[in-house]
Length: 310
Ligand code: CP
Ligand code: NVA
Image (cartoon, rainbow, N blue to C red; front, top):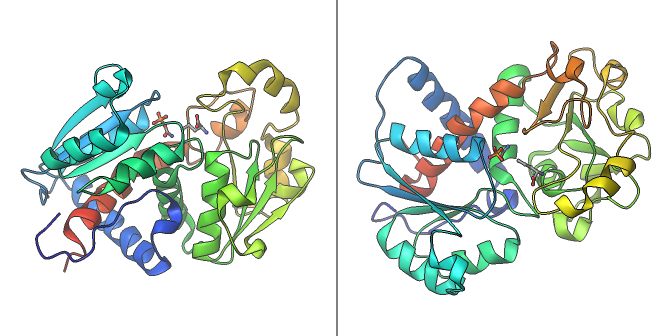
């Protein structure tokens, strides 16, 4: 962290930042993206090191953080449970104390949010949530940045969540409370969101619907995710049966706003949570969404390490 920055911030949940900080970050993400697209070098993080700890698989999170950090002039360490003493029962607290004496920022993808919080509580440097069972804040940061790029301000808009009441759903709810939009949630019975885990106080930021078509009605954005998240593979067969009607198709898109967008954090399973016609169709912005992980996270790392620029 830059000397003189008074308060170290972690990014463990979406609600760790305020609306005005998000407005700043979306502006920085756009500025950083524009410079990158123009091949302008921007290296504010020379000599800074990012350690990434992966306890679950990743394509987008790994590539976006790694490429983004290198582009900003820094270095990256990629660690996994298997190749560190975390996999041999060294306490998370000790691991955090040691790693955070040698690197400048840490990104963790793990199972329980409590592991991330224990790490952060013993870290001298900012810690970023790269996905836990409970939340995926970097993804929603990129998703909202993508929405703004395509459609402008998200305040007052309706986002339809079709599918599992999972880490993505919880994070959408937190974002709705902070940024002033509404999430229309439809999940199969038994897979509902848990408002206590989502951690939202304002029950007006979401509405529950039994049928996914109802959730999609009038939505400005329709979004979904895999039926079985990482860590829940043993439930795969049971989930396939329960989720069969929660496949985003053209009928669902037809009842949303005419210019509604479709998003999916990826990886996707065509024919399960979304049809090929929708994810590969004209309303889908999933490739922009994936690319924007990198631009948004560059803005986030810059903010956590250097504070506001300019
Ligand atoms: N959306 C997302 O986080 O993708 P990865 O699992 O590939 O990182
Ligand atoms: N909900 C999914 C998101 C993957 C990026 C999972 O946790 O596996």
